[in-house]
Length: 287
Ligand code: FAD
Image (cartoon, rainbow, N blue to C red; front, top):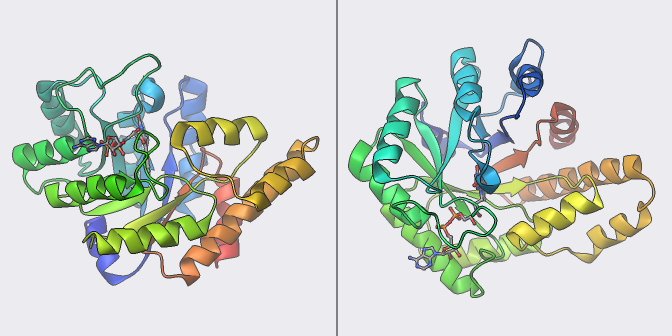
């Protein structure tokens, strides 16, 4: 069943993992009783796997998705980017996913590797990728796309950013998964703007628990999410106590997700950082 059909019936719950760089990491993720096995017990609707975030480590993405597909516990969703890909590359690579039974994708422009000013590929924006996939593959893929509740970091005008999202819907995207955010009010305002702009497909809220000061500052500078005062206070309070800071980060994410659920979010997506214990704690809180 397509994930798009699930959205028609109820809100979805999903996880994101990333492909580890080493064989040991792969064993931890995909091996017996590994991260994936633990995530399956939480019964997500789908698990998505990143693709070369930051321009590196595309390598084991297909292996991870292949494992999810073969295990048959939930739908595998591959992330796929325009970075460094010609149209021919895209056709070939996407056909490989289909050959492996993977027919859900999150179509992205991709994070630009350090020093790059463009994608160095034939396509420049996610909208072009969605159009291209629809032209070449018709309805074979269910296509998700990214949305930024506070506007994309490279676009200072939130209304323009939302217009660009509408273009992705018009090109054939079936649902949105948002960039991380720490202030739910930003998400609710964004939902209203999206609604006014004619966005009708489901918008899934993406949440990442913060684990430490350096991680949070890296993420904030990468995506432009704002840090609300409660988060800054937590960071200050536990500055010298990493364990309590992590627990507070998980608690904060759980509270965000509970609030989003109460406010009728179309879907909840947890950036698990390949840490199933965090996902389990949060799921317990969500009931
Ligand atoms: P786009 O929608 O193409 O937008 C990029 C910029 O171009 C924006 O500023 C937008 O406003 C602007 N724009 C769009 N259309 C036009 C137009 N017609 N004219 C002028 N400007 C335009 N990155 C990875 O590399 N790998 C991953 O696996 C990955 N996974 C992600 C998962 C999620 C859920 C999210 C939210 C992001 C993920 N990213 C990943 C990051 C993503 O690639 C970056 O946010 C990237 O900077 C933009 O990607 P996009 O698909 O949103 O781009």
